[in-house]
Each structure stands twice: as structure tokens, then as C-alpha cells.
Amino acid sequence: MKNRHVVGNKDRKKYFFMIKDAFPDIDIPSKSKTEIAKIEDFDVLIIDNSVDFLVANNSILLTIHAISNYKPKTRWVTVDEGAIRFIVNGADVMAPGIVDADKDIRKGYSVWVKDEKHSTPLASGIALMDGSEMIKSSSGKAVKNLHHVGDTLWKFFSKSL
Image (tube, rainbow, N blue to C red; front, side, top):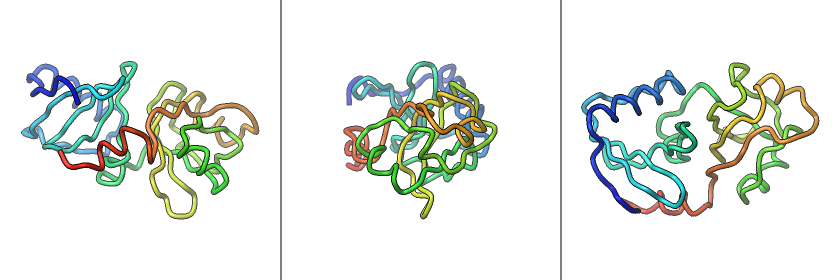
């Protein structure tokens, strides 16, 4: 982790707005200690010493850890068991493996991916098609996988700060 520092009020408000816009059901107390740092190619938002969000391409993504903690009710994509091993090895999410998705997802939105059987968080990424198209489509990439279970970021987050 490089350049870890406390975020100023102006930037904190900007990030909190981005979070609320992407995941309206996630409430972060306004008095939370908010820091930013660099890990690999990502800026990470650290809320009260918990690495919860990735900032990439002007999008805010949930870390796997944050998905488990906050349990967001929006921007989810559900995949079948056959897709899991590919996703946790870093592959993008292909439309044929998707069994359901939040129909409010639009191309370019940050999304999170879960398995069908247990709703276990598997990955975070960027939607490459709308949610309704993900469900209907029988071919093509549906989600660009940016962070997944077992990747370098996940292993880093698994360690205590």
C-alpha cells in the first residue's frame, strides 16, 4: 500500500456521493475516518480502517470484503456454478453463465458478482451490457472482472491493516 493519507472534506464528500449514487442502500456515517491509498493500479478507499472500495476509471467498486459487510441490494449479477472457477481465476463474466441480474444495471455501471447457490460474493467489475441484456444474451462478455476472490487485492485485504 502506497501513499496512504486522510482524505480532505471536499474529496470525502465526492467519494461518499459516488458510493451513494452507485449503492443507495449503503450508509456510511459522515464522521467516518476516510483515507485513500494506492494498491497496484487502484486507488482504495479505507473507511474506519477497513478497505471497502476501489476507485477505477471514475467508478467506485466494492471490495469482496465490503460486499460481505454491507450486503448491497443493487447492481448484483448472479452466476451459475460452472462460471465460478473461471471468475475466481480472473476471467471476465460471460453472459451464458449469468442466471440473473439487477435489471437496473446499465452498461458502464460498477457491479458485483455472486454465486447462485449461496449468494457468496465472487467479484467486482464493470458492466459491459445492461442487466436485462445479461440475462437474455447467450454469448459475449457481460462484466469486466477487476477484483475477485483470491486475487492480489483480496489477499491483501484479508490481512489486517
